[in-house]
Length: 360
Image (cartoon, rainbow, N blue to C red; front, side):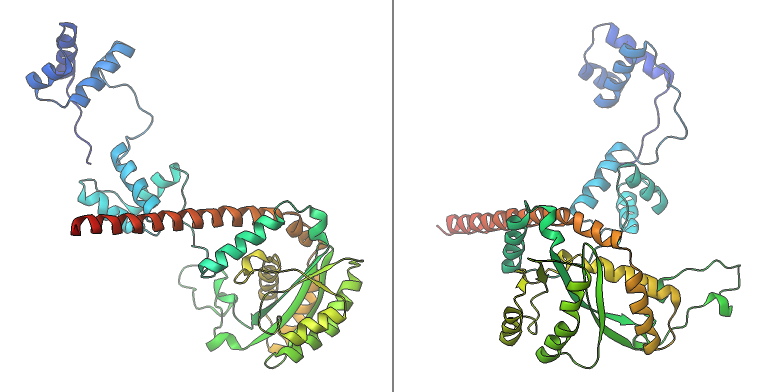
């Protein structure tokens, strides 16, 4: 894998002279003891540029040979979680010594970057089929259909939860200056649960859930917040309510309450929080709240409601307008899961047949 030293000009000239004399590559290789790839490269350069000297190159030559680049690219394609240190050790074993920065620059040139892995729900086969079915059924729905949807969900807001990710500008040896530190407490310093909803026209009401929510409390929350939100957002006739498959949401009493109120519910696949655009608004809300640094849980609730109302309707409309991209991505992921499952299934069958042949 290590790069070899360049041949002297005399050796290159001799290779060209032997080629002019009518000798083939293999004959030249046997006579001079060089590699056939080296001989071929020198002859091709001579045919193209009529010279054997090294052409001027922009900057220092690459420390990693093309074979080395191909090796690390193959590694990260097969194992994306491979670290830079692992790649450094792989190249070192092959004879090339480089730093992790060189590895990073090389992969960057190949349009790869080191990112945090996205966390997604663990999906079973039934979940994959349900999500794929939902995506296929609604992939061609117009944007007007999604404008009629009132999205909802619950989330947990921690008092000091997101502050740990903030950064400060400070001088050296001033890390523990009171202005440069973020106070931390165990378990996030307490938290509150929130229920919220939104549509393409903006955010609806935000409600704090006190205590453990059961089906009765959930129906009370809907009665106090869902219909008023729909009226405030001017959802009009034919609007659709979205909530996930939490047992409190799918309870018989809850279904009867929604039916009595003549509220149409969007059929929703299990284990699909990433399909709900309200997750983006929760992230936005947590960033906004963290900047205001609430001091207690009552302050946290107040700030949450204030910042929730400040989220611009344009952001909500943009999330709904781009919903088709979520479905397209889910269709592609579902197709990949199905292909992989099919390949693995065929592989198991093939292995079984081979074992049977061996036994026979």
